[in-house]
Image 1 (cartoon, rainbow, N blue to C red):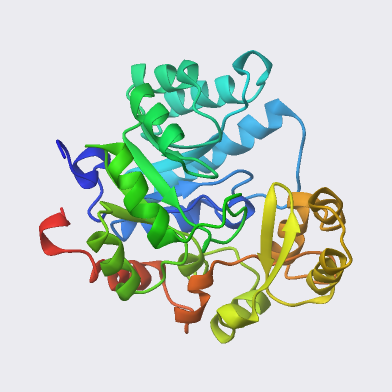
Image 2 (spheres, one colour):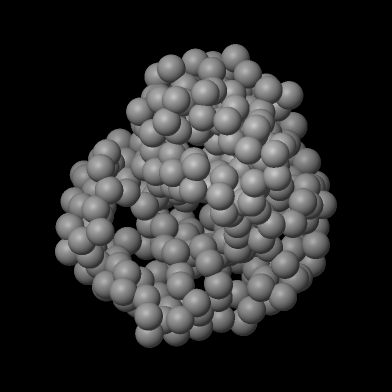
Length: 328
């Protein structure tokens, strides 16, 4: 490897916080970055109500970026979701312009590899962490060729929108490491304690990409009643059901139980995702704590999470599993 993850990104530990939509805000992201990892603002960070206005979306995002910069001097990132056709993508270009204007150093890119956008990011000095929703050898090599600085290998153990292929984290990881060549690869999916961190590095990872473990942070926006369930439940309690694009998980509740019943009765993933109110169901369940109208999706690392703690303490504990020669 020509450069380590920490050399590329400039943070102390090779740990990236997953950009978990509504559940991030400036306070949470800055706490993660101040702890030595890379905090990342997700879509609708700091917000409670959706908007379809591009102007308002950009203004909200700019305000949250500026709040982060008042709370930390360390690197942080912003999530970008790429549409297949850049000519029909109204959001990505203006968002990248905002990143350039506000000097956001890192983009966590999801979706297809679009060289047009990769080139714009790279030509403006923005580092790219590329995370395919379903990682493959092909899209890994495409991302490397397009200039990605870091690749995320996401396995089926993750929360949120899981990969369409049922391949575990510690199976997909070495495959993506081999495909990425000299580019650092982050392990993602079900990693919530030092044992999983050590296993990730043993399989060739250069760092870890963490979601569920950091939702247990005091600073995360996860509803307090859902946080209490997060630390009490384990992987055996999680419900799995079809939902576009493939599957979703949730802790039990009125709506999640109904979605599982729909799945058992043969409803399609599209029908079930509509019944879940699509991504708004995650806002209802995880931001507002209402499992009558929403769902709460976590990765299978939930079994190793037992306390609500400051982000700094969670990062410090996970970092003990990182080999000494890797730490910056």
